[in-house]
Image (cartoon, rainbow over all chains, first blue to last red; front, top):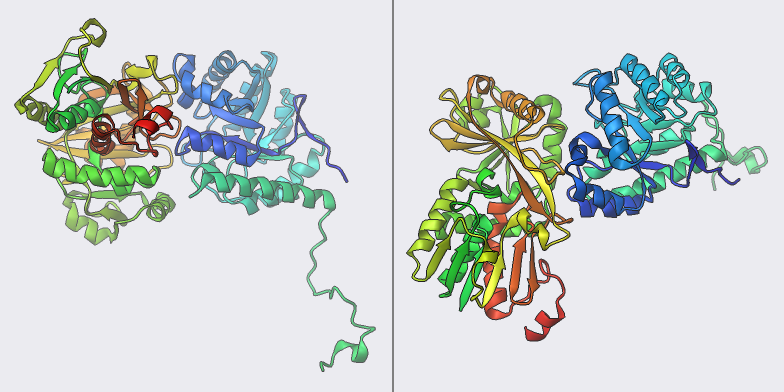
Length: 265
Length: 336
């Protein structure tokens, strides 16, 4: 079975790994990791890395040199107004209508302020943006975001940078089942390639991560590991995993064996 | 041989000193009014090679080990009290990660931390102690280098001077201008750093303390007389100018985690400047005719400058070639 490519706001992608660009030991290692990850989309924080277009030109030049699509983000924004202004500046600086919308509601968990998120998403969609909202796995919030005009949802796996994997597997599964035709991307909380594979096995369309690669002992090798895990998870989803069961079921029937298979030579 | 060194920051001063010690006539040129008034002025001055291994390449560790000898013997301004790395209990995974990436430390418990730094009693349950690391006051170090240079027989200082406006009568020019050299080095980028100096008599620390935090890592370097240098942000930007409110907020909230009494301290200085870096965050020596660029020291100015200065002198005076920090230059290889 051939996989159909991922399409986000009309852009077709082969890779299902979206990568962040923060916290790498150096831009050279970032570039090598992006290559090893085979990623086609990187997310860039306007506030911390691009400096509002006045500065950060050389870092932006390095990002451009990666030859991948840029998804600017509003990381660190705590209010609707701040997020909207940052998105509008990002559009000028990066020349794209794509924006990963973050409205942070709580400092310790960095969890999204979902009320502000829905409001900001509506404003930005009306302004012509393609909004990628960083949200929770809450179904009602997801409905409201789609109602506001988002065509992609990015629920968290776990708090940003925590590396805890999929905290609410049931919730993520329900979200997938509820929105079979909306591109869903697990964003945040992924720690290891097995977490990413698990998200893909649940039928998620892609995974976005940063810290797990950037802070690995060898970021380039870890990027490769994530690329393979995401591909494996996607294949497993398409292949249709077996159903788990409570009792053993021998893979070779024993009935036809001599002595019912009970006696060993 | 006459050597003109442009730029009197830590790279220029250490380079000038190497050439002067080798018997060259040295002219040190800077557009500022005195030595060390650029990016080096705002440095932390931690000579912490093993800590830096957390995010830096092994080359920086080995240069940093050279720097420990340099700043305690050649230019004796550093204090060897080690350095402490701490994390709040909830950020313990960051401390474990730091310990996995580094070496030459001892893991301390709360009692051992209190024995080293009485004012940190009860504040942290574990820490990493890098006993052989040192720290210095960059401004004292650069003043000392300038006075050592002045004692040499054939050293001329030209401050408030543009190198372009002077007669070029030197055999070699060594360009140590840091981020200002981006007019000649197209692949140089700026990494903005912001720092504060706080003053309080309520806290006594004998050694630098690094606080690990997923968003706001901070270090505190004691500068004596109750003064503490708090640093430093790392922002991908080539813009200088004033410190931003957000950075002050982040640095101060992190530093109050180390000790709440910092909340009552006076802010006696705020500063921002731009570190010069290449894409791999490693320094480089780059030849262009009889011009040598020494640049890309990134956040490792005082850590890497002594080793780079020695290598710069070896390149110019002996035709040496250091592949790890130099471009493959066919002319240079032929003459070497």
